[in-house]
Length: 273
Ligand SMILES: NC(=O)c1ccc[n+]([C@@H]2O[C@H](COP(=O)([O-])OP(=O)(O)OC[C@H]3O[C@@H](n4cnc5c(N)ncnc54)[C@H](OP(=O)(O)O)[C@@H]3O)[C@@H](O)[C@H]2O)c1
Image (cartoon, rainbow, N blue to C red; front, side):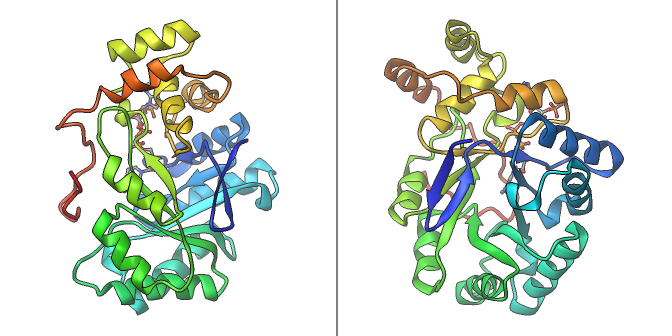
């Protein structure tokens, strides 16, 4: 699997998103994804499934060091004490001494950046995570975070797919030497059925979802599609064995639209437009 390198981290470019996969059926689905071949798993305290993720990793028999595991701290736990408690709880649920990547899930303007980023740095210094990063950070928030962080931030996990223009934040993330991790890389199911993506897919004997994932990975963007269905997990994993032409890449870039954003909860920052 191709790795994306950023500040010493090597992150598998195709990962698996575990949101919504809970309880026995969820643990089975995560185990199925590991068996399909995924070696990069994305979870979060908020998803309420860290126990299932830990169980699936153990049940798979795949050595821990072969899996790149990310978890996240919720925006309501960014004060130093809450942060440390949240990380301890995540590790307890996962049944592991450390994760590979720890992210701030959403920024919180009520907590000073120095405090939240300081707590993130401390988790790394304490050996609870190999790498640290952020999610849903805008151009301005990235600048603030970099002014105070001691340890490198290796990724900004943001919504990226063909229907959303993220040019500004992608450029800023790259300027800081960070990788980009695309969540909702198939726009939460809106990609299948899109006529342009279906047509391009047919030319490569691939599906519209695979085209969306290839469009991202061909730009060096890490993807973490999620599915509870083994056949879709396989489909989403088999995206590195074909190449889109420059004309196809450009045509897909024209699909962006003003209402393309899928995830926009009340705690969202003021997005870059
Ligand atoms: N940092 C953040 O704030 C944030 C926010 C959102 C998501 N995430 C992360 O990103 C991951 C992925 O995002 P997401 O799950 O919201 O969106 P997504 O991966 O774009 O889409 C997942 C949805 O599409 C369906 N699907 C998956 N593969 C498909 C395929 N090949 N063909 C047709 N439909 C397909 C799935 O249904 P089935 O399960 O029925 O297949 C599911 O409903 C999450 O699991 C989570 O780890 C992070």
